[in-house]
Amino acid sequence: MSQPQSLRAAREEHRPGHALPRAFALDPAIYAYELESIWRRSWLYAGAGAQALDPGDFFSFQLGDDWILIVRGETGELHALHNSCRHRGMLICSSQSGRARRWVCPYHQWSYGLDGSLLGSGGMDDELEGGDYGLHRAAVAELGGLVFVWPGPDPEPLGGAAAQLAAALAPHGLDRAKLAHQLDYEVAANWKLVWENNRECWHCTVGHPQYVQANFDAAPDTARVRSLASARAEDHACALMAAGGQDRSAPGAIDHPEPGLFRFPTPGRWWSCNRTPLAPGFVTESLDGAPVAPTMGDFRERDVGTLRIRTVPNFWAHASSDHAVLTRLVPAGPERTLVRIQWLVDRDAVEDRDYALEQLLPFWRRTSEQDWELCERNHAGVRSPAFTPGPYSRKREYNVIAFVQWYLDRLDASARAGGVPEDRQVGEPFDRRAVVGVDGATGKRRS
Image (cartoon, rainbow, N blue to C red; front, side):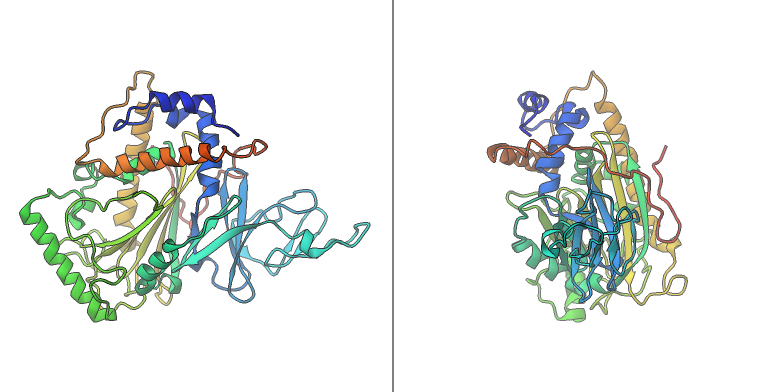
């Protein structure tokens, strides 16, 4: 699949330092090319390891025509298997999650082990070699309780990402967490507009009145605010060292003690993690700053700031001392983005005894839904034939500029490599319906 003409025309139209032309948010051919050149060739956050704790536990991840089953193997390792029988392509599993002893095709009963190896193909003329007809595998990695998959061929080494993410996440104990709640949304906006919204906080003072009470992201860059943020960073550093003996240069220590957003993306890095201070009076990201659950992982002190993680193209997370909130994006067409938000707490925490959803959810549910409304209105305006891309602010939208550059660089890298295979056809996922939350709550798009 070579770059479509519409993409080449949109690239020529784009002015550096300006918003992307409307074709980037609307054109089906550009979207199809993105799926192949970016999404299927990236490490994508699929879910939390807490969703598959025991052997046989599985959950699924869907992107375009890819439906991947992520299952905990007999010895504790994770396997990522393409949900397509090696006989005639039947879906092996129609469930989004569950527990399996083995995989059995409902069509002609070919059976597979949890690792995808062929166990039986009764009725065939000749006995088949199990090693030749196992389920196709996708690359999978579990980092500090977060599960990433590479849907396409030729996965890149995780390299420094694995070491840095695992080290930063270690004290939070997400690998010893449980999924307290999840919500799903279908946002009527292109996935890039959702990311652009995430990469700046110029809109936060008006758009997120609760969020700005807890964080310095939208605070003015003045000597007073810098001094206040630095003092709070010192508080967090003392708590971190008391909790885990962590020195100030260790991964996960406070490394952004100033107003404004941490710079990301940066050249050559699809991930970032940093710890930022919380405003005075806040020891966690809750509406009133008070704890909402027992401490997680290695923490014995609560006032440790927030660990923030981002991986392009589909994930960001904020982790406090008592809970973590994970946000996953999956494109569902040029004008739709599926968003899943997950709240993790300590594995031993008991709902209504140790935490209540009424206190755990509102901070990030409210902030996220405010964002989805902004993204949908932004996308609706971009749809206007009168839309003309305006300039970005280098002072306030530096991360949006960096995100657009990352995106264009990925497209260019694919073009230099000769594009993507011509025989790969991009369609819609098998099931676009919202997934019911783990306790029966379903997140719906705001009207």
